[in-house]
Image 1 (cartoon, rainbow, N blue to C red):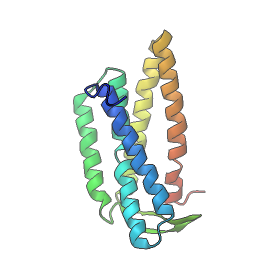
Image 2: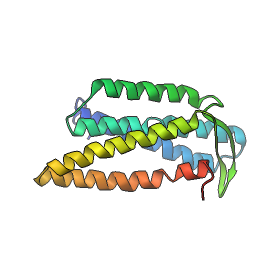
Image 3: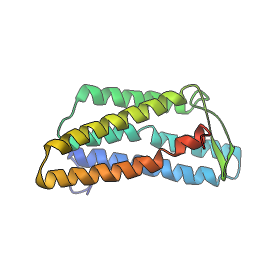
Amino acid sequence: VFFRKTKNNITISYTLLTISFYIWIFGIGMEIIAPNKDWGFFWNRWLYSGAIFIPTFFIHFVQSYLNKINIKFLISAYIISIILLIFNYTPFFVKDIVPKGSFNYASVPGIIFPFFVLYFFLMIIYSFYLLIKEFEESIGLRRNQLKFIILASVIGFSGGSTNFLLVFEIS
């Protein structure tokens, strides 16, 4: 898909979203099996380097797909993600990693981490708002496509968001 339509904003934003998901999930897998704390921290920073951009790439994809790009909003979102990425490499984002549940290592949130979680959920909720609003106004094939984008996104974000429960030790 990417190589056929490299200049298409939908394709680019979806590809970036997919890469971000990959970085995040691969990092989780590696953090779980990390042989020591140094490697655990490396993979923790790796996984959040992907996770930080998931909400930004998702809203970018949604706005591109809906053909309703708000450039100032997207620039703000990218700036926030870059700032969070910088903090990712400090104890303000994740102050420690410790064994939790069946995980060898999991995050102990720093002071900035709750802001990331808030940003994450606000962006995802706003993205769903845009998708649902468009779904309600659409008919035919477009409506069907939106239905499946919404369904797949709800499933994906519902599963992925459970990682925050582990970080905040919520059972």
